[in-house]
Amino acid sequence: MNADTTPSDETGDRPDGDGPALPSEIEAKTREIARQAYANDIAATLGAVPRPINWRTLPPDDLEQELLDLNAWIDWLRHTYGLPAQVVPPMWHRHPELLWELSALRQHWLFSFDPQAKGNQALAWHHDFAIARERLRDWVTISGTRLDRDRPTRVTAWPGGEAEGWVAPDTTERPVTERAKDFLAFVEEQVAARTAEQDATIREIVNIDWSEQS
Image (tube, rainbow, N blue to C red; front, side):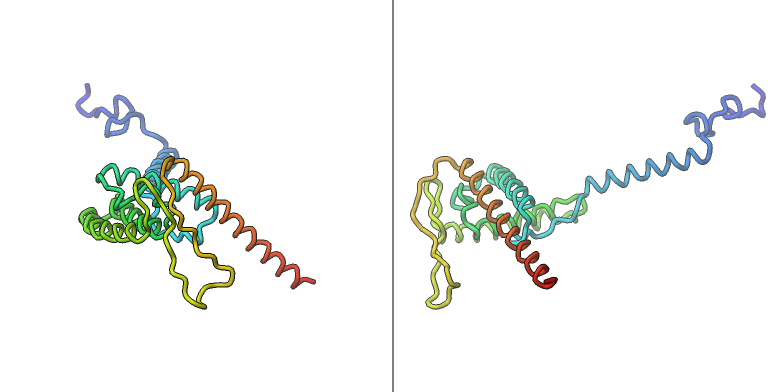
C-alpha cells in the first residue's frame, strides 16, 4: 500500500467506512426520509395529550369507542389493585356519577403515565387515586348498586323544579347475573340515543336553513 493512500482511496468508500458514498442529492433525500420516519414514530409513541372526556357531547362513534376503552381500563384497574365492589361495582356503567368519576380517573392516569409526563406524576396519580377511592365508596353507597344486585340511583325531585316531561327513574332492584352482556346492551343504548340526538339536531339545522331560504 502506498503511504499516501488512505482506505477511502482504495475502496472508494466514505471515510467513515459505512459503504460507498451516495450522491449528495440522494443522501439528502435519504436523511429527510429517515428524519420524517423518526418524527412519525415519536408522534405515534407519544400520541395526543389526554384530555377530559365530556360524555354529553361525544359523537356516536366516539362514544362507543370511549365506553369500550373505559371498560377495558376499569377491568385492568380492579384486577391490578384488587378493588372490591364497594369501590368499583359491576354495574358502574349504569350510574352516571360512577362513570364520570372513573372516566376522570382514567384520563388522569393516561396523562400521568404519558411518556412526556414528569417523573413524579405516577406518585401524584396514586395520591389522587387514594382520594378518588373514598369518593367512589360514597357514590356506591348513595347509588345502592352492589356486587350481586343493582338499582338506578335515586334522584330527589324538586317541587316545581323539574323539566316538563321529566320522569323519575325506576329504582326497582334487580339481580346482577350477566354483567358483560348488560354492558354491551348499555353501549348500544347510549349510541342509539346519541345518534337520535345528533339526527334531531341535523334536522333542526336543515329546517332552519330551509325556512330562511323560503
